[in-house]
Image 1 (cartoon, rainbow, N blue to C red):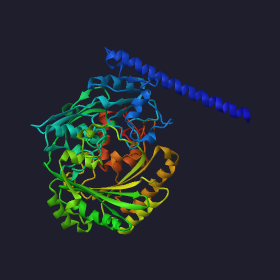
Image 2 (cartoon, rainbow, N blue to C red):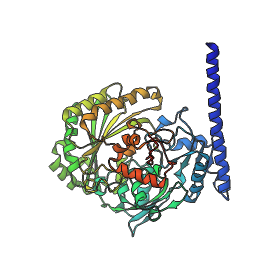
Image 3 (tube, one colour):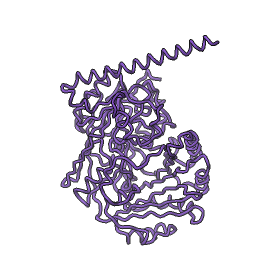
Image 4 (cartoon, rainbow, N blue to C red):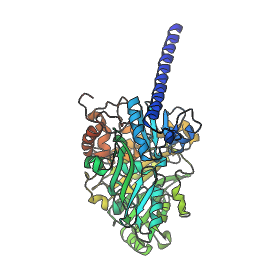
Length: 530
């Protein structure tokens, strides 16, 4: 028996050493390929990092916003490349394809499941942190935004040029635009102007052949696909041209909290779902439900495209139960409101240029869409779940109102299908400190029980989910890259509904061998993959 164990161990070590050797060979071959394909390799050599480089770990970790995927056991890339210009990316794509390395493209690093910087097979990270320029054209009301820019940088650069132009991007300002726009991208102006992806008018992408394409050369099908279907399935997006929107010189914000125990917080939250999705387009009122010591509190925060007096009068008309008063409201510029929405001080404005948060927590997110108001007793059940010891102290529920402009855009206009009839998005985010990593399994199990509890009360057939709140629990592809349409439909229909079929058709044309892939990438159609 002992000899058998030793034999098994020897066999395991042999397989492991062979795997490591193959991985090292791929890395060496990839680097040799780069040297060959770059006529002047020195132009990029300082932006190429392997595990032997002293800067490798700091470069890798700088843009990891979910430390759950920064542990020692998390697979690491063979190479990280931080190109400084678009023209340096085609050779990287060609060499990765030639040497059998997978590509993960990282813009801001906010992928909720870490897929922009983690893979289970040998891979290379293209980190776009240096490709982050924002050029604003006030006369045309447009901007070209490189994919490595953060939403905060975009807002800052727009406001620097004009106080009455803005863009409907993410609420959190460290989010990278490469992934955010390609997944649709909601924010505090979505009810007025739609999603970020709805306001993209051109783009640049490097395809599987290493070609740099714009809207005209990529064609309308691919341009449609990357404005909500996730760019990583189709290539490396390097830039977006967006249509800017008009914003008033003065917007109004408020953030008021009502406790569940003493101030009817649960009842107000229940009432909110009848009001916020039907309000006029200028009004965005979202809700965060959280534990504070021994209480559960319901926070209503709002950005209103107009003055305080009009807001108070309107809120007293449509939601008098909340008891909003003039003293609860603050008038400010649109650019200041982007800091307020991100729960940051509204001065100094250059805080918007920060790419990282002061502290990062491990987390697991779930998302749903609600099309029929949820009964009060279910909200009370959600509060009870939040009080359970298996829920981390920093777990929140987050509800974002739809309606307004979102109701006016067809489900098939972009791959993002959650339009007319969706009252709001409901998400839960369980967060915990790195020091609590040993309890991660308990907290993640709680999110799954919560998700099961909500099943009868959210959308169904399919149960819709938001792609940018990626959740691998709802289904994954085969790691070998050969995933059938039926298998991918399990998760794909949840994100895209009927648009999934068109995404598969586009993928089949532009990347038939499925080079650009991950656990939830769009697969090409192949009748042999069953």
